[in-house]
Image 1 (cartoon, one colour):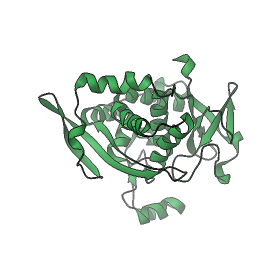
Image 2 (spheres, one colour):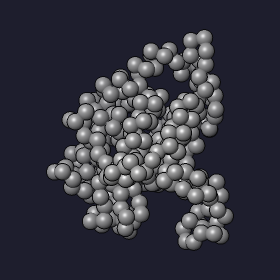
Image 3 (cartoon, one colour):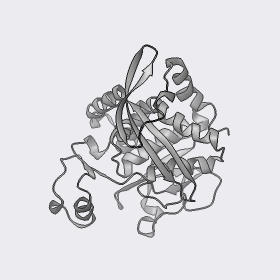
Length: 277
């Protein structure tokens, strides 16, 4: 599968082989969040690891372990806090691009995890994207605030309801109300654009023609994929980007919920085009 081979070898497998990281020694790890050590020659590296089991939107089951290095997460958090918004000409697009560029190469352990699923169950480009996106859709939604999280009664509507049912479904004091892809993989707390930046980073690494779309009207962020399939799309620079909601399960590529479905209210803020890379 052309979209998969190549980029993974460059960004994932080569680094794993070069660093001689042993992933096999951790097969008995329980399927929850852990801060663990992996063997690396005579030393060890500290990583965050999440065991994940999910079904895609067509009912196919998958399981894997999402792993990021402790040092990479720490550096990403520091870099995120040091971003100067005055230097961003196109604010959200430039911010997302910087975060994706910095995090992308350090997501190699996660890229390899998805690639191993592909090796076990070869699939089309569309179904591979479905597997990756559904993994993130199945992570419970969490609010990401620039300010500190408050008690549920300090909010209204669905936010109050969410935090009343799940007090931990909020992470505060995050610059721009956004987590970097690496920080997201540390705690699995992500809102709309935390998820879209992560998926943009991963799908770009697999050489998809992927976009991030934002809406000021809906106050929301989604992804778009330029694939030869039918569905709802945003036309941008002559390409049809099939739109995809990422914050909950059971959302298929090319089908937005009616309440956010007017494409006139969506704008492409960032793209990755394979032919340009």
